[in-house]
Structure formats: C-alpha cells, structure tokens
Image 1 (cartoon, helix red, strand yellow):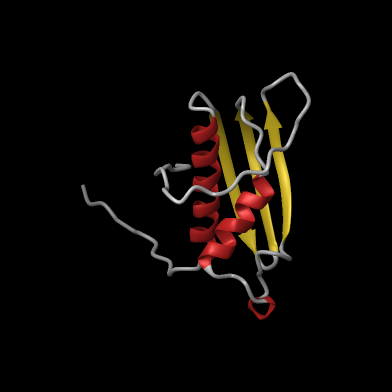
Image 2: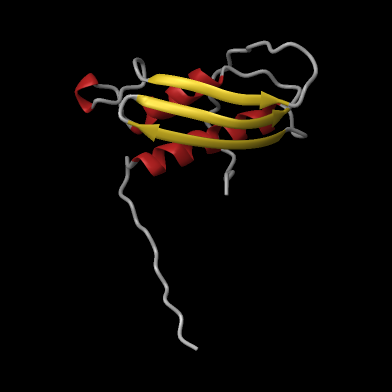
Length: 120
C-alpha cells in the first residue's frame, strides 16, 4: 500500500505563524498566573484583523488584547504600511468563560522568559 505525504511550510511573519505565536502566548500567560488553567484557544489573523476564540477556565484575568498586541509588536508589525500593525489592528474576542463569576481584566507585563506551549 502506498502513502502520499504532504506538508506545508510558511515563512516567518506568515499569518499562520503569527496566529500560533499569539495562541501560545495566551496559553503561557494563563498557565503562568494560574497553573491549573484550562485554555482552548484558536487565533485567526488576516489583514488588519485578529480573532481570538475559545474557552478558558482559570482564576487568572488577563488583558488578552494587549498580550496579542505585544506578540504582534515583538514580531515586528509596527508600521501601518504593512496593513497589519500592532497598535491599530482590530482584535475580536470570542472567548467563553467556564467561570460563573463576572469577567475582570488584569493588565500584565510580558515575561522575558517564555514557557513553551502549543495550541495543537
């Protein structure tokens, strides 16, 4: 029996890689502030827009929009001529919380050390 193997490779700065880095950062932050967090996060990136979706069960409250913007800034999308810029891109949140309480936002500074995580 023969098999067909295919793979995809995208370059640095490709929307798929940006999306993966944003999802990883969100998971890292939730786990850093609450190691028992349960995070299912999907990120979609397109021209000028980011969609963050999923479900979170955590005691931590994070400013996920700012975390996403920090990742985009760190990657280098800092000029409007790129048609995708950290400070002006639209970020849509479609997260469901497993908590019964009201949602609060806590702004946090990005840690210099990165804890590896994956959304796959």
